[in-house]
Image 1 (cartoon, one colour):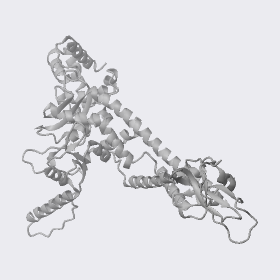
Image 2 (tube, one colour):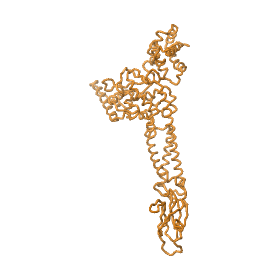
Image 3 (cartoon, one colour):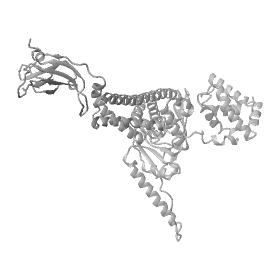
Image 4 (cartoon, one colour):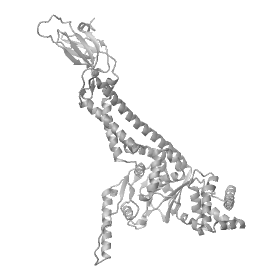
Length: 562
């Protein structure tokens, strides 16, 4: 009950807004509402209670803690952690809170970090002050206010439309699809280190079995075992990869849709101190990224359902102060070039900035950054020498370090900020892709070994020439069968089955009949024709498989002629 005076103010604010005497909602207009109530409506008892609450710094901190732990929860703002920070930040500039030391840190900051924007002051060639800290906060929407509200600077309302639309696209639109495509092809997976090694060894085992079947010793009766293990191992690895991709993509889409709906019903407040008036849209990229970060600050639990979003927000929040961004952004998330050299120079002079997000343009390359860093180092050394004439100096300072990330789309910035790109993963993905391409080419051969095709039956037509024996088969897989002639009268022959055209097209083997030399008791109708399975793997032919058919020469010769 020590802070019942605040409940009195809040009740007055709500009732006045409901009656129409106040134009703004109690939350979004809390600053002006407090000023009105404290000056004209507060009773003497309320003023005494307020003075008692602010008598010492510990009691002031108790009031701040009460706003966070009790008032915000009782007002059903548990799902938005930024509301009490916003309230305290607005009250910190008004009496009597403007005189309370406990409110000091809330007067210039909401206590959240964001991706700094690179905004050049007029005629600036690139100074550390041009790296502007940006804070973003997502509050429940105000029906009378705009979707994005600037604080500490001025800009046209239309300049915030494109960053907001790009943020929505990245959450559950085309932007997210582009990101998922980038992540699938070369992004880090949510694997433990040991599992990544095990999967890589699994792909190595698949390649080893392929090489064994291509160039190893004749497997004989073990061919079925080796082929079955190869198919099972490859299928298991592909299934595991597909399940992980599908699961994480679905969770990212579902979480993104939830965050997008929250953005639709929120007002984003962008804070950048300095009183600047922005000209141009080069701060669009950091505004977009900080809009996303504001949704995470409001309710971090929502992102934890998706590994992709949780990793992105966690990395961006923890490393935000070492990043900076610039770029004009379109509503669908694409980045267009900006003036970049003075902004690179500003980042090189800044103590904390080590990474910069830029549009993909020629003058933002690594060579340009290295040249600027070398130029700045030489300038500093010359300045130091000129100010210490006659003294012997030694220079051990390192050259400024800065890495530029050229991005075509905001999805590329998400890959960079979240640390999703991984050269090891990319190499593993390419290796798996090459192995899978080989497996797809060999899949039909492996299938004929593991699940043999049905045995074919000899059908018409037969050969009209006495010098040839046609063995026509009713099969759709001729390359996995061969025909063997065994006879004491004719030369033994082996022939492949293949599609043949002509007047009488069919799938057949054509055996040229050639009589054996020497005396024999056999006649021209003596002999057996066997149908054998062919066992092959890509370019290699194994020893013949089982015999699945047996026909006499007279039967095949007369087939189709009677």
